[in-house]
Length: 487
Ligand code: GLN
Image (cartoon, rainbow, N blue to C red; front, side, top):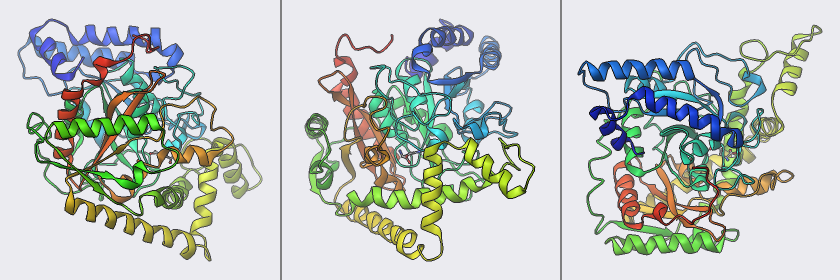
């Protein structure tokens, strides 16, 4: 059910908020055994919030925009009094004493917390397999991954275990799982949304954004979570436009750039490429002008990211020392040994790998060769985008080089997993807004996602084009029969 449809049902009294919450919880119990999208449910809290909404409705009080919308929250967003684990043994018992800005804004808008969702440990991964609490499955095919790192949120939205969810995107963690699970995922402009209360991975790249079943809902959720925040100095002091305002407007005359380097790249499946090129034609028939553009440094994004992100992660994760937060290994010999054992025992191997890479890249003697170089390439990538946006309004690429892969298929080869973020990382490096939405299915019936990238603070245009495409292409209506999504 879309948010607007739900709002109408709630206001007319056709369905109460409590009924919806109970329905969701029942469904989660039925379906989530096989998916493991949720790490924990907030049943009592959800029911009591729902009751308050129902009371407000019957007494005729104006309801806030997301009243009664059941939400799933990635478990790296702090929720006051509700365990927030980052899918790590390190934070297994961590109960935040404060609420993240984005979730506070959701609750103030009437949204209902249903539960916290699974992720790759500390959001490092592309498959939700590095969670210390077990992997999440893809609802379209349980033997496959939902993508990552926000795989739990994507799977929950795809299989109707919440109406919308929040994730975080450092190198593609909203868009790639959205594409693997056949839902809409939006990474806003860096600084559009507050990071206060988001457990930091790579602070110059992290952004919070929505997962929804449709573009209009993404606009509605973005509306609520966006805007300046005195608690996050990187949050932009920019007015928030009405993101739904132009959704119905034609995209006639809008120029859409096809990045040459994304389509000629080895490793991008032909089915994915064909499906996105078909979508490009759909945009054209809606009146958009297709323009071939080049971002010569686009494919250097991965190498750049895998220096910058681990460097920032190594600094951010230094705080888990066994003293201030979370897990502490028992050892009386020395403080150093206690810290070292704590980190060796409570961080999984992918997190340890990132910390080691980052510490190395930042160390004296290597800093100039790796970290500084990566920052320089980052600037070049941003400049490539700037040049493109002189010629076009939006850029179109596939979201991910392939559809959802089999669980375990990248177990012994982290680099092959990193390649999965080839097409999403550049937007993070340049701080640009980007959205993934379904554009077709492969021959196995797995969803394919397209990515639209906008200019800085260009979310309105991005959502408008995505919405117009969604309405015209109607991809989910043409969903293959017999797929295994548990409905
Ligand atoms: N998959 C990428 C990584 O492993 C991106 C993760 C993210 O966006 N949080 O770093």
